[in-house]
Length: 437
Image (cartoon, rainbow, N blue to C red):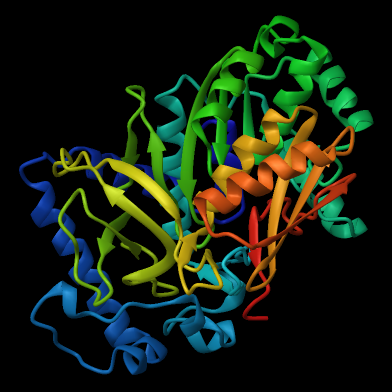
Protein backbone atom coordinates (compact mmCIF):
# COMPACT_ATOMS: atom_id res chain seq x y z
CA UNK A 1 0.00 0.00 0.00
CA UNK A 2 1.33 3.46 -0.86
CA UNK A 3 2.17 6.08 1.74
CA UNK A 4 -0.95 8.26 1.63
CA UNK A 5 -3.35 5.33 1.74
CA UNK A 6 -1.30 3.75 4.51
CA UNK A 7 -1.63 6.88 6.66
CA UNK A 8 -5.41 6.89 6.16
CA UNK A 9 -5.58 3.16 6.95
CA UNK A 10 -3.61 3.67 10.18
CA UNK A 11 -6.18 6.31 11.16
CA UNK A 12 -8.91 3.68 10.84
CA UNK A 13 -10.18 4.31 7.33
CA UNK A 14 -10.62 1.03 5.36
CA UNK A 15 -8.84 2.16 2.19
CA UNK A 16 -8.37 -1.28 0.60
CA UNK A 17 -12.06 -2.09 0.90
CA UNK A 18 -13.05 1.37 -0.35
CA UNK A 19 -10.67 1.13 -3.31
CA UNK A 20 -12.27 -2.13 -4.41
CA UNK A 21 -15.73 -0.58 -4.13
CA UNK A 22 -14.64 2.44 -6.12
CA UNK A 23 -13.19 0.28 -8.89
CA UNK A 24 -16.49 -1.60 -9.09
CA UNK A 25 -18.32 1.73 -9.45
CA UNK A 26 -15.99 2.72 -12.31
CA UNK A 27 -16.75 -0.56 -14.05
CA UNK A 28 -20.50 0.16 -14.32
CA UNK A 29 -21.37 0.86 -17.95
CA UNK A 30 -23.17 4.04 -19.04
CA UNK A 31 -26.16 1.92 -20.06
CA UNK A 32 -26.43 0.37 -16.60
CA UNK A 33 -25.58 3.51 -14.65
CA UNK A 34 -29.11 4.99 -14.24
CA UNK A 35 -30.47 1.81 -12.64
CA UNK A 36 -27.31 1.37 -10.54
CA UNK A 37 -27.57 4.95 -9.28
CA UNK A 38 -31.26 4.55 -8.47
CA UNK A 39 -30.54 1.40 -6.47
CA UNK A 40 -27.88 3.24 -4.46
CA UNK A 41 -30.30 6.09 -3.70
CA UNK A 42 -33.07 3.73 -2.62
CA UNK A 43 -30.62 1.75 -0.48
CA UNK A 44 -29.34 4.77 1.48
CA UNK A 45 -32.87 6.17 1.88
CA UNK A 46 -34.15 2.85 3.21
CA UNK A 47 -31.18 2.55 5.58
CA UNK A 48 -31.78 5.94 7.19
CA UNK A 49 -35.54 5.45 7.41
CA UNK A 50 -34.91 2.28 9.41
CA UNK A 51 -31.81 3.32 11.37
CA UNK A 52 -31.94 7.07 11.91
CA UNK A 53 -34.82 8.17 14.18
CA UNK A 54 -34.09 11.85 13.60
CA UNK A 55 -34.34 11.45 9.82
CA UNK A 56 -37.44 9.28 10.08
CA UNK A 57 -39.10 12.01 12.14
CA UNK A 58 -37.99 14.66 9.61
CA UNK A 59 -39.26 12.78 6.55
CA UNK A 60 -42.53 11.74 8.31
CA UNK A 61 -43.68 9.26 5.64
CA UNK A 62 -42.19 5.85 4.95
CA UNK A 63 -43.23 5.63 1.30
CA UNK A 64 -43.05 8.03 -1.63
CA UNK A 65 -44.25 7.52 -5.18
CA UNK A 66 -41.24 9.29 -6.67
CA UNK A 67 -37.85 10.60 -5.62
CA UNK A 68 -39.08 14.16 -6.28
CA UNK A 69 -41.52 13.87 -3.38
CA UNK A 70 -38.81 13.29 -0.77
CA UNK A 71 -38.47 16.47 1.36
CA UNK A 72 -35.47 18.74 0.85
CA UNK A 73 -33.11 18.95 3.83
CA UNK A 74 -31.58 22.32 4.69
CA UNK A 75 -28.71 23.33 6.94
CA UNK A 76 -31.24 24.80 9.37
CA UNK A 77 -32.74 21.30 9.76
CA UNK A 78 -29.39 20.12 11.10
CA UNK A 79 -29.03 22.74 13.84
CA UNK A 80 -29.19 20.22 16.69
CA UNK A 81 -26.61 18.17 18.64
CA UNK A 82 -24.70 15.68 16.49
CA UNK A 83 -25.54 12.83 18.84
CA UNK A 84 -29.23 13.34 18.04
CA UNK A 85 -28.54 13.04 14.30
CA UNK A 86 -26.38 9.91 14.20
CA UNK A 87 -27.74 6.60 12.95
CA UNK A 88 -28.11 3.60 15.23
CA UNK A 89 -24.83 1.81 15.84
CA UNK A 90 -22.67 4.90 15.22
CA UNK A 91 -20.93 6.87 17.97
CA UNK A 92 -19.06 10.14 17.71
CA UNK A 93 -15.87 8.39 18.81
CA UNK A 94 -16.13 5.92 15.91
CA UNK A 95 -16.85 8.24 12.98
CA UNK A 96 -15.13 11.09 11.17
CA UNK A 97 -16.38 14.35 12.72
CA UNK A 98 -15.82 17.82 11.32
CA UNK A 99 -17.48 21.22 11.01
CA UNK A 100 -18.70 23.21 8.01
CA UNK A 101 -17.19 26.62 7.33
CA UNK A 102 -20.43 28.47 8.01
CA UNK A 103 -20.22 30.47 4.77
CA UNK A 104 -23.97 29.96 4.30
CA UNK A 105 -24.74 31.38 7.74
CA UNK A 106 -25.64 27.95 9.19
CA UNK A 107 -22.46 26.23 10.44
CA UNK A 108 -22.87 22.81 11.99
CA UNK A 109 -20.92 19.74 13.03
CA UNK A 110 -21.38 16.68 10.83
CA UNK A 111 -20.25 13.06 10.76
CA UNK A 112 -19.19 10.61 8.06
CA UNK A 113 -18.74 6.91 8.69
CA UNK A 114 -15.19 5.74 8.10
CA UNK A 115 -16.02 3.60 5.10
CA UNK A 116 -17.77 6.48 3.31
CA UNK A 117 -14.88 8.77 4.16
CA UNK A 118 -12.39 6.26 2.77
CA UNK A 119 -14.46 6.02 -0.42
CA UNK A 120 -14.35 9.80 -0.69
CA UNK A 121 -10.55 9.68 -0.59
CA UNK A 122 -10.44 6.91 -3.19
CA UNK A 123 -12.46 9.15 -5.50
CA UNK A 124 -10.27 12.20 -4.80
CA UNK A 125 -7.07 10.24 -5.47
CA UNK A 126 -8.52 9.13 -8.81
CA UNK A 127 -9.52 12.69 -9.76
CA UNK A 128 -6.05 14.04 -9.09
CA UNK A 129 -4.47 11.25 -11.09
CA UNK A 130 -6.40 12.41 -14.16
CA UNK A 131 -4.28 15.56 -14.06
CA UNK A 132 -0.94 13.90 -13.34
CA UNK A 133 -0.99 14.49 -9.58
CA UNK A 134 -0.19 11.57 -7.31
CA UNK A 135 -1.19 12.48 -3.76
CA UNK A 136 1.20 9.81 -2.47
CA UNK A 137 4.29 11.55 -3.84
CA UNK A 138 3.39 14.99 -5.25
CA UNK A 139 4.41 17.96 -3.09
CA UNK A 140 1.50 20.33 -2.43
CA UNK A 141 1.59 24.09 -1.85
CA UNK A 142 -1.53 24.47 0.27
CA UNK A 143 -3.25 27.88 0.42
CA UNK A 144 -5.53 27.39 3.41
CA UNK A 145 -6.03 28.91 6.83
CA UNK A 146 -4.49 27.43 9.96
CA UNK A 147 -5.67 27.46 13.60
CA UNK A 148 -3.95 30.01 15.82
CA UNK A 149 -4.18 28.03 19.06
CA UNK A 150 -1.04 26.04 19.81
CA UNK A 151 -2.62 22.56 19.79
CA UNK A 152 -4.64 23.18 16.62
CA UNK A 153 -1.62 24.74 14.91
CA UNK A 154 0.68 21.81 15.70
CA UNK A 155 -1.98 19.30 14.70
CA UNK A 156 -2.39 20.88 11.26
CA UNK A 157 1.36 21.15 10.75
CA UNK A 158 1.75 17.45 11.59
CA UNK A 159 -1.01 16.55 9.14
CA UNK A 160 0.72 18.65 6.50
CA UNK A 161 4.00 16.87 7.11
CA UNK A 162 2.41 13.42 6.81
CA UNK A 163 0.47 14.46 3.69
CA UNK A 164 3.58 15.85 1.95
CA UNK A 165 2.42 19.44 1.76
CA UNK A 166 3.45 22.89 2.95
CA UNK A 167 0.72 25.20 4.21
CA UNK A 168 0.86 28.88 3.26
CA UNK A 169 -0.95 30.84 5.97
CA UNK A 170 -3.54 32.83 4.02
CA UNK A 171 -4.78 34.59 7.14
CA UNK A 172 -1.77 36.88 6.64
CA UNK A 173 -1.61 38.10 3.05
CA UNK A 174 0.52 41.17 3.71
CA UNK A 175 3.14 42.06 1.12
CA UNK A 176 5.94 40.92 3.42
CA UNK A 177 4.31 37.52 3.73
CA UNK A 178 3.74 37.28 -0.04
CA UNK A 179 7.47 37.84 -0.50
CA UNK A 180 8.02 34.89 1.85
CA UNK A 181 5.59 32.82 -0.24
CA UNK A 182 7.65 33.53 -3.35
CA UNK A 183 10.89 32.73 -1.53
CA UNK A 184 9.52 29.30 -0.59
CA UNK A 185 8.55 28.58 -4.21
CA UNK A 186 12.13 29.41 -5.23
CA UNK A 187 13.47 26.98 -2.61
CA UNK A 188 11.03 24.03 -2.63
CA UNK A 189 10.07 21.66 -5.50
CA UNK A 190 6.28 22.05 -5.33
CA UNK A 191 4.27 19.94 -7.79
CA UNK A 192 0.94 21.71 -7.45
CA UNK A 193 -0.94 24.50 -5.70
CA UNK A 194 -4.22 23.75 -3.93
CA UNK A 195 -6.40 26.22 -2.06
CA UNK A 196 -8.93 29.00 -1.83
CA UNK A 197 -9.38 30.89 -5.06
CA UNK A 198 -9.23 34.45 -3.69
CA UNK A 199 -5.91 33.88 -1.91
CA UNK A 200 -4.22 32.33 -4.93
CA UNK A 201 -5.54 35.16 -7.14
CA UNK A 202 -4.10 37.71 -4.71
CA UNK A 203 -0.74 35.94 -4.86
CA UNK A 204 -0.93 35.99 -8.68
CA UNK A 205 -1.50 39.76 -8.63
CA UNK A 206 1.60 40.08 -6.46
CA UNK A 207 3.57 37.97 -8.94
CA UNK A 208 2.43 40.23 -11.77
CA UNK A 209 3.70 43.28 -9.88
CA UNK A 210 7.01 41.51 -9.31
CA UNK A 211 7.09 40.54 -13.01
CA UNK A 212 7.51 36.88 -12.07
CA UNK A 213 5.98 33.81 -13.70
CA UNK A 214 5.95 31.27 -10.89
CA UNK A 215 6.84 28.23 -13.02
CA UNK A 216 10.05 30.00 -14.10
CA UNK A 217 11.32 30.05 -10.50
CA UNK A 218 9.64 26.76 -9.50
CA UNK A 219 10.02 24.54 -12.62
CA UNK A 220 8.58 21.48 -10.83
CA UNK A 221 5.15 23.17 -10.66
CA UNK A 222 2.55 21.40 -12.84
CA UNK A 223 -0.94 22.46 -11.80
CA UNK A 224 -3.11 24.80 -9.74
CA UNK A 225 -6.31 23.56 -8.09
CA UNK A 226 -8.76 26.27 -6.99
CA UNK A 227 -11.62 25.53 -4.64
CA UNK A 228 -14.33 26.88 -2.30
CA UNK A 229 -14.81 30.28 -3.98
CA UNK A 230 -15.93 31.53 -7.40
CA UNK A 231 -13.30 31.51 -10.15
CA UNK A 232 -14.04 34.31 -12.61
CA UNK A 233 -12.78 34.02 -16.23
CA UNK A 234 -10.40 36.97 -15.90
CA UNK A 235 -8.99 35.52 -12.67
CA UNK A 236 -8.38 32.18 -14.40
CA UNK A 237 -6.52 34.02 -17.17
CA UNK A 238 -4.41 35.84 -14.58
CA UNK A 239 -3.59 32.58 -12.78
CA UNK A 240 -2.61 30.80 -15.99
CA UNK A 241 -0.36 33.69 -17.02
CA UNK A 242 1.35 34.33 -13.68
CA UNK A 243 1.58 30.77 -12.39
CA UNK A 244 2.53 29.40 -15.79
CA UNK A 245 0.53 26.18 -15.32
CA UNK A 246 -2.95 24.84 -16.06
CA UNK A 247 -5.76 25.74 -13.65
CA UNK A 248 -8.33 23.16 -12.52
CA UNK A 249 -11.41 24.32 -10.63
CA UNK A 250 -13.12 22.23 -7.98
CA UNK A 251 -16.59 22.58 -6.47
CA UNK A 252 -17.11 20.71 -3.25
CA UNK A 253 -18.55 20.75 0.25
CA UNK A 254 -16.81 19.59 3.41
CA UNK A 255 -19.88 17.70 4.63
CA UNK A 256 -20.29 15.85 1.33
CA UNK A 257 -17.50 15.33 -1.18
CA UNK A 258 -16.13 16.82 -4.36
CA UNK A 259 -19.28 17.82 -6.25
CA UNK A 260 -17.76 18.80 -9.60
CA UNK A 261 -14.18 18.76 -10.83
CA UNK A 262 -12.76 19.97 -14.11
CA UNK A 263 -11.75 17.08 -16.34
CA UNK A 264 -8.95 17.14 -18.90
CA UNK A 265 -11.36 18.60 -21.49
CA UNK A 266 -12.07 21.60 -19.26
CA UNK A 267 -15.59 20.38 -18.43
CA UNK A 268 -16.89 20.67 -14.86
CA UNK A 269 -17.70 16.98 -14.48
CA UNK A 270 -20.22 16.15 -11.77
CA UNK A 271 -19.41 13.49 -9.20
CA UNK A 272 -21.91 10.69 -9.77
CA UNK A 273 -19.77 8.06 -8.07
CA UNK A 274 -20.30 8.83 -4.37
CA UNK A 275 -23.12 11.39 -4.47
CA UNK A 276 -26.26 12.15 -6.49
CA UNK A 277 -26.57 15.73 -7.72
CA UNK A 278 -29.88 17.38 -8.67
CA UNK A 279 -30.93 20.87 -9.71
CA UNK A 280 -34.49 21.44 -8.51
CA UNK A 281 -37.24 24.08 -8.64
CA UNK A 282 -38.84 25.84 -5.65
CA UNK A 283 -41.06 22.78 -5.04
CA UNK A 284 -38.18 20.31 -4.95
CA UNK A 285 -38.83 18.81 -8.39
CA UNK A 286 -35.83 18.04 -10.57
CA UNK A 287 -35.48 20.48 -13.45
CA UNK A 288 -34.59 19.55 -17.05
CA UNK A 289 -30.95 19.96 -17.95
CA UNK A 290 -30.21 23.51 -19.01
CA UNK A 291 -32.54 25.09 -16.43
CA UNK A 292 -31.22 26.99 -13.42
CA UNK A 293 -32.30 25.91 -9.97
CA UNK A 294 -31.21 24.99 -6.47
CA UNK A 295 -28.46 22.39 -6.10
CA UNK A 296 -29.38 19.47 -3.84
CA UNK A 297 -27.12 16.52 -3.01
CA UNK A 298 -27.62 12.98 -1.78
CA UNK A 299 -24.67 11.23 -0.16
CA UNK A 300 -24.94 7.66 -1.43
CA UNK A 301 -22.68 5.94 1.12
CA UNK A 302 -22.71 7.88 4.39
CA UNK A 303 -24.64 5.71 6.82
CA UNK A 304 -23.57 7.55 9.96
CA UNK A 305 -25.40 10.76 9.05
CA UNK A 306 -28.10 11.33 6.41
CA UNK A 307 -27.60 13.87 3.63
CA UNK A 308 -30.55 13.05 1.41
CA UNK A 309 -31.77 15.71 -1.01
CA UNK A 310 -29.68 18.14 1.02
CA UNK A 311 -29.80 21.78 -0.06
CA UNK A 312 -26.27 23.06 -0.09
CA UNK A 313 -27.25 26.69 -0.60
CA UNK A 314 -26.05 27.10 -4.20
CA UNK A 315 -27.76 27.61 -7.54
CA UNK A 316 -26.55 26.00 -10.74
CA UNK A 317 -27.28 24.56 -14.16
CA UNK A 318 -26.58 21.03 -15.45
CA UNK A 319 -25.49 21.06 -19.08
CA UNK A 320 -28.05 20.00 -21.69
CA UNK A 321 -25.56 17.58 -23.25
CA UNK A 322 -25.08 15.60 -20.04
CA UNK A 323 -25.61 11.87 -20.20
CA UNK A 324 -25.58 9.02 -17.65
CA UNK A 325 -22.08 8.57 -16.28
CA UNK A 326 -21.00 11.93 -17.71
CA UNK A 327 -22.93 14.76 -16.07
CA UNK A 328 -21.54 18.26 -16.63
CA UNK A 329 -22.14 21.29 -14.43
CA UNK A 330 -22.66 24.09 -16.94
CA UNK A 331 -22.53 26.91 -14.41
CA UNK A 332 -22.65 27.72 -10.73
CA UNK A 333 -24.56 30.96 -10.36
CA UNK A 334 -24.07 31.74 -6.67
CA UNK A 335 -25.59 31.10 -3.30
CA UNK A 336 -29.36 30.98 -2.93
CA UNK A 337 -29.24 33.40 0.01
CA UNK A 338 -26.82 35.88 -1.58
CA UNK A 339 -28.98 38.69 -2.91
CA UNK A 340 -28.73 42.42 -2.63
CA UNK A 341 -32.19 43.87 -1.96
CA UNK A 342 -32.66 47.37 -3.41
CA UNK A 343 -35.01 50.17 -2.24
CA UNK A 344 -37.33 49.62 -5.22
CA UNK A 345 -37.89 46.03 -4.07
CA UNK A 346 -35.70 44.49 -6.75
CA UNK A 347 -33.47 41.58 -5.70
CA UNK A 348 -30.10 41.47 -7.43
CA UNK A 349 -27.91 38.33 -7.26
CA UNK A 350 -24.94 39.34 -5.14
CA UNK A 351 -22.66 37.60 -7.61
CA UNK A 352 -23.74 40.05 -10.32
CA UNK A 353 -23.33 43.01 -7.97
CA UNK A 354 -19.88 41.81 -6.98
CA UNK A 355 -18.89 41.10 -10.59
CA UNK A 356 -19.78 44.61 -11.81
CA UNK A 357 -17.95 46.23 -8.91
CA UNK A 358 -14.96 43.91 -9.19
CA UNK A 359 -14.28 44.67 -12.84
CA UNK A 360 -14.56 48.42 -12.27
CA UNK A 361 -12.54 48.64 -9.09
CA UNK A 362 -9.69 46.55 -10.48
CA UNK A 363 -9.48 48.79 -13.54
CA UNK A 364 -8.55 51.58 -11.13
CA UNK A 365 -5.24 49.86 -10.52
CA UNK A 366 -3.45 48.78 -7.32
CA UNK A 367 -6.62 47.15 -5.96
CA UNK A 368 -5.97 43.60 -4.74
CA UNK A 369 -9.28 42.40 -3.31
CA UNK A 370 -12.78 43.68 -2.63
CA UNK A 371 -15.64 42.78 -0.34
CA UNK A 372 -19.13 44.31 -0.45
CA UNK A 373 -21.28 44.85 2.64
CA UNK A 374 -24.92 45.92 2.42
CA UNK A 375 -25.50 47.81 5.67
CA UNK A 376 -28.93 49.25 4.87
CA UNK A 377 -31.43 49.00 2.04
CA UNK A 378 -29.74 51.81 0.09
CA UNK A 379 -26.30 51.81 1.72
CA UNK A 380 -23.41 49.69 0.44
CA UNK A 381 -19.83 49.76 1.69
CA UNK A 382 -17.07 48.51 -0.58
CA UNK A 383 -14.08 47.35 1.44
CA UNK A 384 -10.98 47.16 -0.69
CA UNK A 385 -7.36 46.18 -0.18
CA UNK A 386 -5.04 48.45 -2.17
CA UNK A 387 -1.64 50.08 -2.09
CA UNK A 388 -3.18 53.56 -2.46
CA UNK A 389 -6.51 55.24 -1.80
CA UNK A 390 -8.98 55.49 -4.66
CA UNK A 391 -9.36 59.11 -5.71
CA UNK A 392 -12.69 60.94 -5.97
CA UNK A 393 -12.95 60.57 -9.75
CA UNK A 394 -12.47 56.80 -9.51
CA UNK A 395 -15.10 56.53 -6.79
CA UNK A 396 -17.56 58.65 -8.77
CA UNK A 397 -17.02 56.52 -11.88
CA UNK A 398 -17.77 53.35 -9.94
CA UNK A 399 -20.78 54.82 -8.17
CA UNK A 400 -22.25 55.93 -11.50
CA UNK A 401 -21.68 52.50 -13.06
CA UNK A 402 -23.31 50.73 -10.10
CA UNK A 403 -26.35 53.01 -10.33
CA UNK A 404 -26.56 52.35 -14.08
CA UNK A 405 -26.64 48.59 -13.56
CA UNK A 406 -28.67 48.56 -10.35
CA UNK A 407 -30.58 51.62 -9.16
CA UNK A 408 -30.04 55.36 -8.72
CA UNK A 409 -29.64 57.25 -5.45
CA UNK A 410 -27.79 54.44 -3.69
CA UNK A 411 -25.23 55.39 -1.06
CA UNK A 412 -21.91 53.82 -2.05
CA UNK A 413 -19.06 54.18 0.44
CA UNK A 414 -15.47 53.04 0.02
CA UNK A 415 -13.19 51.88 2.82
CA UNK A 416 -9.58 50.98 2.19
CA UNK A 417 -8.28 48.15 4.39
CA UNK A 418 -4.83 46.71 4.98
CA UNK A 419 -6.42 43.26 5.08
CA UNK A 420 -9.95 42.08 4.36
CA UNK A 421 -11.72 40.05 7.01
CA UNK A 422 -11.78 36.32 6.35
CA UNK A 423 -13.44 33.39 8.05
CA UNK A 424 -11.46 31.23 10.47
CA UNK A 425 -10.74 28.82 7.61
CA UNK A 426 -9.42 31.62 5.42
CA UNK A 427 -12.35 32.06 3.03
CA UNK A 428 -13.20 35.52 1.76
CA UNK A 429 -16.96 36.07 1.79
CA UNK A 430 -17.31 38.47 -1.12
CA UNK A 431 -20.78 39.80 -0.25
CA UNK A 432 -22.44 40.22 3.14
CA UNK A 433 -25.89 41.59 3.87
CA UNK A 434 -26.70 43.00 7.30
CA UNK A 435 -30.37 43.46 6.49
CA UNK A 436 -31.39 40.24 8.26
CA UNK A 437 -28.98 40.52 11.16
